[in-house]
Length: 160
Figure: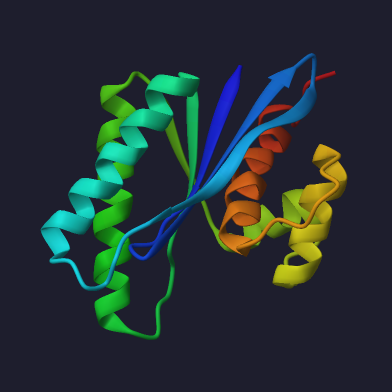
């Protein structure tokens, strides 16, 4: 099964695809969808949606794991991230995916073993768990892979 992790953002939206086979995870793809702040908001959302559709077509994930945004310091950022989340959810459901949200603490706990992990520790754990040799830059791609790993960890809870 394929899982698409999404770290939502309007300027940088991280994505990561993992394959889960016999309780083992393998990184398939990771990157960032970028939109230009110089474009109008509707155009940026359209570009993001089009790129997301390509990912859904290319990988046909069964699940999309997306970060639940609990707090943003900047109201404008919170609104735009919410708009991106809405697009991801609707496109995911339309493509037949199960869509699950995880809080940042849930992701940190599942991947690093504690909710206080910082960005660097999370990136290193993602690389370790998925046997990735090169640094994941920007960190949005690592965050997206961490979301997909969080789904995998929670999927297997209680399974023997």
